[in-house]
Length: 216
Image 1 (cartoon, rainbow, N blue to C red):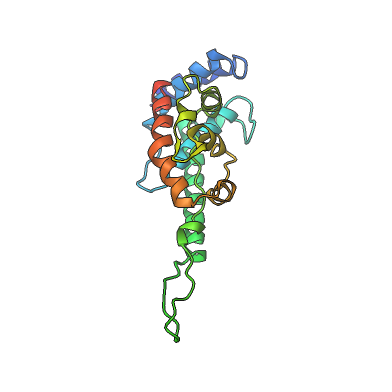
Image 2: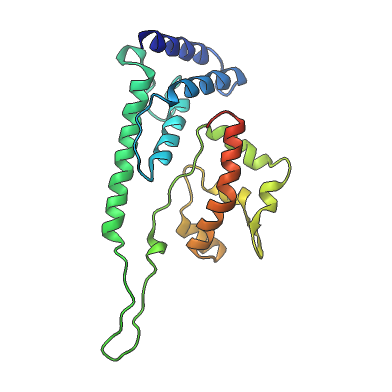
């Protein structure tokens, strides 16, 4: 374990010795992600992958410069310890947010009033919080989505709505993501329609890109 930690420290030093955004640094950061991925805290919760992706993003932005948080200090512990501490905090945030949402958005069931008429009902899906879908290396993903070299992301759209395609949705769901409620209002479509399309059509393409980049 000591040898592994030392190996990570050396890789971090090498990565930070290269300019921000350079291919050399990106390659070394990806190597560190691969080495540490199997050693991070794991739990079977629906928001674990979201918290993990935020952790990788935090790692890339703060391991050298401290762009969005406290810069990594090897004297306080290993890379794995540092990442696990952040990951557990994010998991706690997701848990608390989910708990608050469950309390705030109790499903209202359709029921009949005394007159026999159906009273208005609210679809609880409309109140679901937006969940981040950012991949580990956000910068690469944004370039890939914007470039869309073969046009596949633009071609893949909701039937009858060419303006609502995978390129648009993936870019809008990058942190700081636009909520499903806002997207539904912008495109005049229901939240389930947008979310279902994103899950079925956009996420598989996003995962394929991440796998080709060696991020998954």
